[in-house]
Length: 258
Image (cartoon, rainbow, N blue to C red):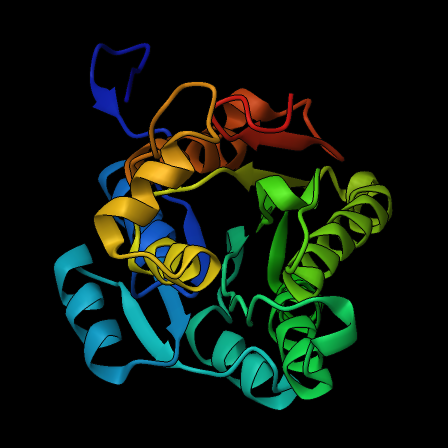
């Protein structure tokens, strides 16, 4: 938080309205909590009705949780129209799925297509239908990944999707600049979430503790991120502190992409 000129403490997003996809868990929920603590009204889109309801109740007055599949443009349009017709200031396109670990020769085509549908089409639908109600000077953040800057064997769908999100971001940053809307991607490394633990189990075939240890060994800082650490980077990009940052790929990966 920061002090106002009258000596009162105000949030960095005081009075702003934010939309977060995949907001009922993990990095999305951690970001929603931080946004709400910093004064924003937060609207969540996701797939788990009970988790969305619990998150909205926790976030306080004005918060909503709406079931919407980001692969479905009509559902995204309807959800945004229902919760944000009065305007948005921040969009965090966070919804994602991983797929499987397999060589390109063996990768299931339907799984590949679904990963791109969620990650790439999902971000596209979210931005496309948010732009008409996004106020000038707003901020759009796409949650990519360290593998949106690098790549590894066996993750063709996930790495392709995360790289594609960077291309979408760069086009949007240029198209939205005249309205002073900033568009950026963040690129988290391994983060202590259920989503990441499932990836590590799939990638290593090891138990949770051993898989985490293996991944810690890949990170120069030697540990997983806490979801709140990633959320603080999203907050920075959402806030006026980042008013001159657009078209940027922000690595929050403990040095993995160096």
